[in-house]
Structures are given as structure tokens and as C-alpha cells.
Length: 591
Image 1: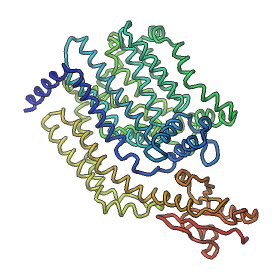
Image 2: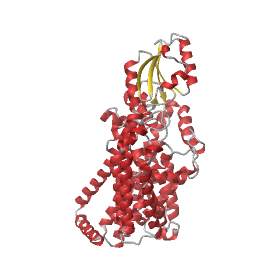
Image 3: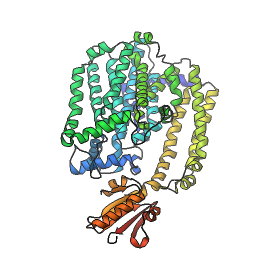
Image 4: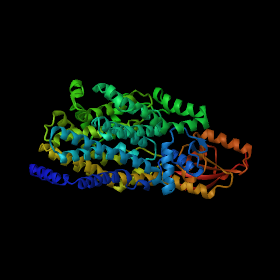
């Protein structure tokens, strides 16, 4: 039965393979399905998530409102954390779609779509070129491997999180990944191919965009990947001659430097010290904002962030036999794509492992390489190659992981700790039945995979993983996020609306005990943040002595903090309570 199905599928693909329009339509339909589900579906239905996302969104809104496209501002002060690309793209989206969550997240979704589309094209092209050199035709294999590469990237936890979040991380990946893919497409093409120079130019353009997305790392990462790869295969000098580096330098500088010149001209050393000093040099050499982690941190991040396919990464890397340098140097350029993906993965992983400040999002740029490596390893099976022992071990790791996840989901509500911002969430989550549904989805996937592994039928395994992840995203993860939003973020949006309704002219808004930038974005009002109750009490006393023109303060806090600030009900008027938060008006007449 299996052999019959494989033969029928191969024959069907050979027939449509003769019609380029049919293949093009099938490819676009696949990418639209995967991107639509993973990146776009209901993306704008959830409010902005504190704390980072509204920082970007409000700075972009300020650009949109004021027309100042040079200096980013948040809450009335400059924000030099990241360069302009994210702010520009969100501000443009505001022009097109209005100021809303969908517009905030659209640039990230588009960047992620670009990554999987160009990955699909590059994988398919490299395999087709390999077939041309071998004088064979395997259109079904080539299309399936490209489809798996794009799908494993899109349907992975880390990519989904940042493709649905309006911050700079996916825009950086959406520039670095295309720059590396375009470089390989140029590198692997014949010397006299007219597309060779065009792809080198495209690589330079994407590097410039990466610099505008996150600064120097936008050129350092792709530069290190390309340099390490070329030195290993002995192609550094030939590529240096053919890639037109002087033209590339002009393109990169011409596209990326003007904004840096303008923002430094306007803000001087404040920008240089903040962005280049604190947010680049210090983040690499020192622990910033308490983001320290052990040396094995990124092993866990990649394992969970690329789940459930991460179990196949060690086998996918081992099959390359990258240590056989002489063999790799003897291959034609178009056959070196797997090795290139290995250097891509390794350089990014090692670079951020060396960095002292560690955050999960830092290794997002290696996720496309992970998908390529895993897909190419499955390509050997589609070609009828014998799977290795390491691959079989990976399959059983995959099965074990899904089994553990399915069991854990049944107990998730009991494992959640107390959350003062959303005290009812664990109870509501359990009542929703969503964890149970998630456990059932992954349990069915585990049983199905076990069935095929017992039959030594490997081909359906990757498809089961992808289908299960898609089902989990549609029917469990997305509804859970909406439920969480209703408990954690909706009360803050309601409070922002109440602030707009109740604020008197000149009345200051004070937030005590927490920092929730969403209130600034949704209220369009500046907010004074005070972390400690004692500091808040001192600040109130200071305002009483200064006798504010408005004669009162609007204070947003949690109810239990009011007494700790030394405030009693007769002193203030409670305006509204939503969720875990209370908005009060405090007259300043008494000392």
C-alpha cells in the first residue's frame, strides 16, 4: 500500500511538474496556507502585550502623529533602544490600516512570510540544480523538501511568537535570513548567470535593512556566517572578486547610514552612548537588565523554540559530515547548501552564547537554518536513502517529547502559579477545557507516530508533526491567548479608556507598583511610573507641597497597594476597578 501511494504521488507530481503554472500555484497556495495560519490568522484580535510590544507601538504612533521620522519617542522621552525600521514599518501600517493591533503586528508577519517564501524557493532551487547535475528528475522530492523547510520554520513556537508580536526581532530575522539566502543563490549560480549579480545586490540590500532593524548585529551576523563558510570551502578569494564588495559597501552605506547620521546630528552623544554603548557593546560584554543565563541556555531555547522538530537537528547536522572538509571543497557550489545552513546555524548559536546578556529572541535568526537542515535530512528519505541510526533515535525522541507534552497539558492548570495580574486565569483555563484538548491532540499525534515507527514507515512522521502543530495552534493556543488577554491585558485597556474619560486638564497620571506601557499606547497620555509603594508615598507628598494646578492625581495601581502607600478611602475617590487594577483620584489639598 505504501509503495503504491508513493508511486501514485510521484507520477501525479511528474504530470503537473511539466506545467510550471500548476507548480507555481501549488507553491503559492502552500505558502499562503502556512503563513496565513501561523502569522496572520486572528493576529490583530489580541491586545498589545506588555511590556515590549507597546513600547514599539507607541513610538511608532508618535512618528505617525508628529511626522518626526528621525527620533523615536515613548512617554515623552527619546527611545534609543532600536533603530528606525520597526518604527517606520509600523507607522506606515498605521497610515494604511489605522492605529490598531493588526497594524502593529503586520510588519512582523510580512517579514516572517518573506523568510519562509525565500526559504522555499532556495531549497527548491538547490535541489533542482542538484538533480540537473545528476541528470535525474525528482520534482516531488524537491517540492516536498521545500514545503517541509518552510512549514517547520513557520510552525515552530519561536517563529510564531515573534511573527505575531510587533517588535524588532522578526524584522531582523526577516532581513538577515533573506540576505544569507540571496548570497547563496548568487554564490551557487554559474559565473555568467545574469541573476548572479542581482542576488548579490539583493543580499546587500537586506543587510542594510538588518542594520536599520537592530544596528551593527545586522551586518556582523551575516558577515560572520559568510566569512566562516567561504574560508572553510576555500572560496573566499573567488567570491571577493565576483561579489563586487565595493558596490555592496556603497549600497549598504547608502541605505542604512543616512538615518544614523540624522539621528546622531539631532541627538548627539545621547544617542551614541545609549544605542551603541549600552544597547550593543554592554549587552554583549555585560549583563543588562538582569538577563543573565547559564552557558546551556540556548540549547534549551532551540530545543523548545523549534519543537517538535528539534529532536531531528542533531541527526540532520551529523548527516552532513561537515568535518570532511576536503569532500565539501570538491563539491560544486550548488551542492554546498546543507553546509551553508550548518554554518548559519552554528555561527549565530555560538555568537549569542558568547554574549553575556542572553534573551530567547536573540537566536531567532538561526531558526530558518534549523528548518533547512531538518528538511534536507528528510529529503534523503524521500529519495529512498537509508535512514541512519541517529535519525531513528531522533524519531523516538520526537515521540517521547510529544508524549510528555500531551501528559503535561492535562495538568497545566494545576501547575500554574499565582498571578496577581490575572488571579482567575488558572480557574478559567481549566474550565475552558483547552489544556485537555491540547493534550488529546498531541496524544493522538504521538500514537500515530508510534504506529508508523513500529512499521518502519518514516515518511508520514514529519507530516503528523506539522498537522498536529497546526491543529494545536488553531484550536488550543490561539483561544488560550484570547483567554489570557481577557484576564491580563483587557483590564488595562479598559483602564486606559477610563483615564481618557476621567482625566481633568493638567491632571497627572501615576502608575504605582508596575510598568504597563499599554496604558500609554491606548490612552495616548504620558504616565509617571513609580515602582515602590514607599516612593509613591514620597512622590504624593512632594506633589502636595508643590500644589499641582489640577489639584489632584489620577493613580492606577492594585487595590492592596493603596494602604501600603498610606492612603485611606476618605482621602481618595475610587473611579473604576477592572480585573486586578483600580483607578483613583487623589486630591492634593491636604498634607
